[in-house]
Length: 288
Length: 187
Image (cartoon, rainbow over all chains, first blue to last red; front, side, top):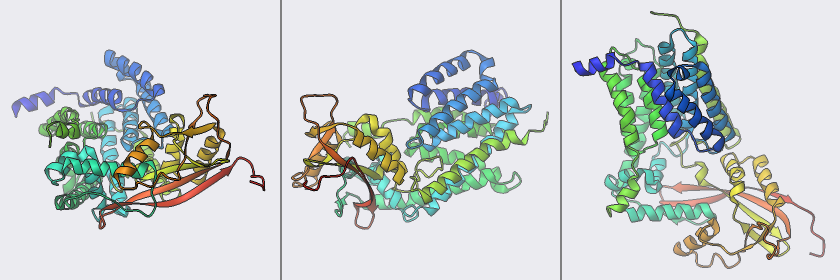
């Protein structure tokens, strides 16, 4: 524990958050030519020169590039790309402030809370989430969740492959008034219901914990809840860009008075990237 | 040490997130924007992602109807039409398709039509191809006779998952048709 405390004591949380964000921006923001080249040049300058990465102009440029790309590619831009843009803009505002760490922490807390609030609202109003249909469909067709579908749901890889082919068939040229059967197992039904409610409950808790007043009891447990969310979610569904931006924001708002929390986020930054395993390919390779 | 912070520095970005997310909610409920996209954090909440929507284009030509494989250069327009299928977005896609030069095509394993033919057989739809003709962009190949296209029809389909029947189903949502020129009465 002493080692952890000593390590955390020497950490400049804002500076490390900014360095982590440079890696995030470089690796997980997009492949468009008008984004990639300027980002490579900017991030290279930011890595080499500390003054550059502390500059508000630097972060405003990165934010502008990311927001421009998100808005011009709105028809296929994932939500976490928007969140990364907002986070870079938050770093820009922290550069303008006399108290950059506090500004960054407050932005991080609000961004996490609001992201989860809107995610929960969508899950409640969507017609096929609460009844478990969405996760049943996802476990039966999404190869990113193959390991859970196979090991917990008891689905065979051949069944998953057949379901994916059926979905592709519907996507290529639609056939009206025809049922295309999918292959399922009772285990997938149970897995879908448990996952549906687990995700809804933990996302609601994250939203409440991060948006509530500091004096509320749930606010005290916000980091535990959030870390549990990150580990359980991204070990099953490795959307690494999303996992990383959440982890960095969690780290940026963590308090040195709780060194184990700071250390947990710090380690999660590496763990989340290590989760980027092609589980479907691995399962296929080992013949499951 | 306990310096005060400027409220704009703390609230501007969260306000921006809320503004985009609320706009996305409004567009999703009024313009059929996909819940998965647009910055509203509706991912992993519904089967109805953009992947569950299909945009199918049929050209009406003097040699009958042709289903087209949308070329790579027009994939962005197709994505926009699928993500937010307003009449304007579908019409724009139809107009661009109408402006292209088309030739008859045999589906290959590299295009969506070829994948469809392969999958159709494996799914038990052996007779599905009997009346179908396919077209692709001419690519300046003068040896092929270009099709005389009279109109382009853009159809939007939505596939859904019926958990009780454990099956995918597809329903037609809407169509937009753009005519190049009027047919002669004798045709």
